[in-house]
Each structure stands twice: as C-alpha cells, then as structure tokens.
Length: 157
Image (cartoon, rainbow, N blue to C red; front, side, top):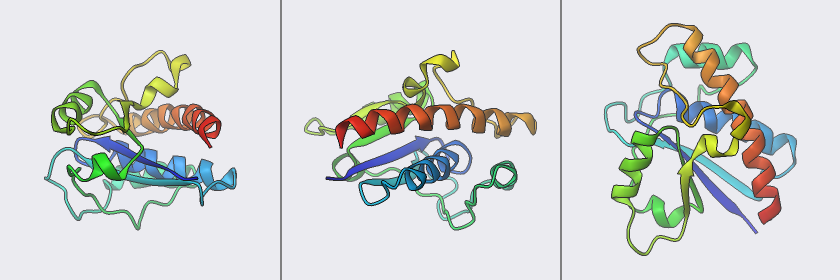
C-alpha cells in the first residue's frame, strides 16, 4: 500500500518545499519511502520552475536538508485525484484548495499543522517578507508537523 502526500503553500518556494524535504527525511529514516510518496506545490503561478528561495535553502541546509533539486510547480485539478493527502500551510491556502477541489475528490484535505497540535499554531507563517528568523521558525513548525503526520500515516499503512 502507498499513500501520496502533497504539501501546498502560496508560491512553492518556502514553506511547502521545506515540508517536502523534512517529511521525506523522516519517511526515509523510518524506512517507508516505498510506501509514502511526497511532493509539494503552490496555489500561485509566480515561481513555476524556480528553485526554493535562497533563504529557505540556507536555513534548511543548516539542519542538513538539501532542497537544491526541487522546482516550484502549481497545484492542478489532477492533483486532487493523484494524492491521498493534501496539506495546506495556512488558512488562505486551504480556502484556495477547497475552491479548486472537484466534487468527486476523496482525498484528505486539511492544514499541515493539524498534525502538530502541541505547536499552539494553526498555520505555518509565510517567511518570504520577514526576517531570517522566520525561516528557522518555519523549520521548527514543519519538523513538529512532520513527526505528527508520520505517526498518523503509519496507522493507515
């Protein structure tokens, strides 16, 4: 059995690629890479084909995550059939996805931080226009969410 997961933020250059690489690392460490497929996308089209933001890559690199091979893409209607779980980084992303979601889609669609209830936050804040510390905060939240998501998916496998 496999479960496919898509992480979604606005431009697919900060939060969702961070979630993709962090979660991929957790899945690999658990020996589940053949059972859990992982990708990320954005609701907007501004950065299609671009690498993650350099500040995102730098913050991730400090913690040992390599996202140099990732390129931004936009969510498509086909993604609602391709993925089993689609996780939005914030409420605006969730609303955009809900508006796109076909009536016959059967995937789980929710906020990523629903898997990190102890974080005290519902949304992963967008660090794009903030300072350098915002990228570390995103990593902290994503690492916590990745642990909770992995535990929840293990129950489904």
